[in-house]
Length: 395
Image 1 (cartoon, rainbow, N blue to C red):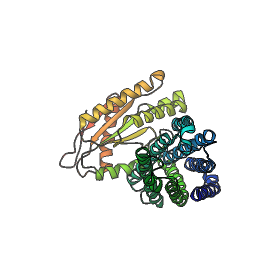
Image 2: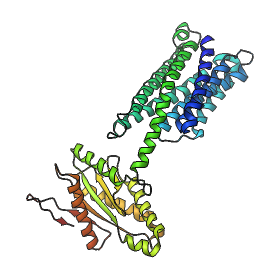
Image 3: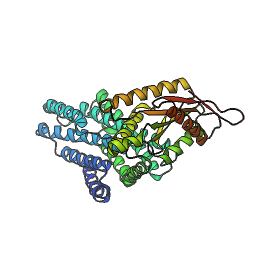
Image 4: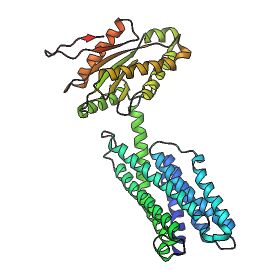
């Protein structure tokens, strides 16, 4: 009883701090879901204080539903930090299952009605939350120096550890509840109401210290994305593409291929159909590249109508097959506007061991211009550099 009262008061205190210190400042999705967690956790604990055998039917279902919803909010908050949106419909199955199970068992089990389903649902949400936080931590570690060394990453690591500990506790609690039952002394001592209150208080303390920093991370990442992405195409801008490509070429031992793609007759399109048509063409090709390249590949807009691609392979035939698929996807995407949508020419250069990025781009660019001279809407592969340092291109 004392721990539940303390947990309710702490939840309300952190709720007030979170609203005024974080949410009203940046209104981030993460902070909004965290506030939802605090409200539902406080409601669940407050309602559990007034449960009796006589009122179990009207108190246990909403108490358990609020508990499950708090776990769902933890998962949604973790997804929000990764930039993913979570619709409220995704939280309904667990909440509904806990409510129904609690109502069915209320007369027979009283306080513990629906606990098996409730614990299972909360366990699933906490495990998903921990998984998403570790995925976020890993993505920051692979971010090639932009945020991996920030204090926010340390906060995410701490939060991931805390979420993992809570997920582990709920797995433990669910197993003991099913195996031993709520009246067993071992369950009561190590996984019962008091242990649960302590575990949730542990989580609240961790998140209280990390909430502000995590919100700052979300703002920093948003600013970085605005600074490094081309707004029209959604691809990396020239500076960011060049930086990432140079890092990729230095650290990739399995070979790489640089492609320069240029929209054909782009100036003519702008002059005859207007800049809106040109923007549609660039946006359509950018979307095609975003969907068409692999997780290890890079694509960016490196000029007005010029694009750069780095494929993480030195196999020319594989690259040609991939580019043919991209050409087909672009043609399908612009089929409804085929009379005005332009074609694209491609130059391909397999990166030699030790070759600098600017050299590979220069060879790919020369191959692309040869594709233009030979009639456009085609792919030309640059020859390997000769030993005397000269190079030539061949179709």
